[in-house]
Length: 357
Ligand SMILES: *Cc1c(COP(=O)(O)O)cnc(C)c1O
Image (cartoon, rainbow, N blue to C red):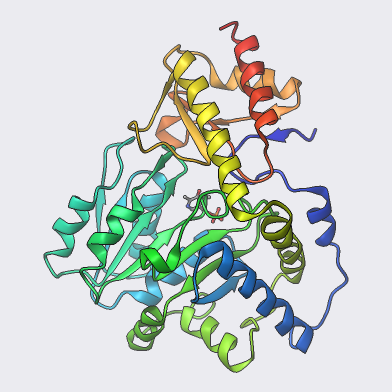
């Protein structure tokens, strides 16, 4: 029943990390809870390369996307989308009554800095959203080049969806000037789903003060208030189980493996999978912008992705079909979290054999 997951979340969880989910409960209002959250903050700051505050949310990443765009936008947000998860920002904004415009690229193309410049130059926007790693098309946006543009607009807040990249690819929050950087537990951090977290810059905090109706549960100002006034606690009762597991997993990431080694492992797995894909099929996103955490492959041979996945299932492995409109037109192989190079060799060899390539 349990297959080795090559899907872009939930990803494989190490058995020792999974066991930490079974840690006995503590009071969420005690000193131990504060100590736990403070420890997680210090460790997450290293993973994110930031001095900013770290907020935790007992929700999936989408919850913090909603909280972030709603708590940040005073005038109007500009959403740059390169696929389904980019579109989600606009959907969330619209349903929350947040003013927003959507700029969508053709599937497989990245958000280019010139495009961002064109919109910001109008002066109409005070919030920008970018998807760092678009999990539908397998594209990684050039955030360093984009940051050069956004830095020229100091009144604009920059929100980045790093849900499927953080802890697998290097995202230097402070160097890039990201105001809110969001991730989820079940992707490259390799924990069970149910916890989201984000960094919050002082500039973002100042903006929250000015924005009126921010809702209740996902009001980022409220999350920050509990960090400051209650010494690193949560607004309601958090998933302490996830926090225990994250505490342990961050030691594995930072101390056991080391961040740079982890990034290199992801890079090597990506290069291997991209080479395999280009040999037998074709990589879907524009060359030079391929994701480091998953490869989206064009179904140039017209195979049945569903049948392929059924056959892989018999061998105890699972990959992903294309997302939304790209179903059967593409398929996706994730290489993030706990997966190792040997796993990538195993899954690609199995596909080569099943399809008699
Ligand atoms: C998975 C994913 C999301 C949604 O995250 P949830 O934790 O499922 O809410 C958002 N953006 C990207 C890029 C993702 O890969």
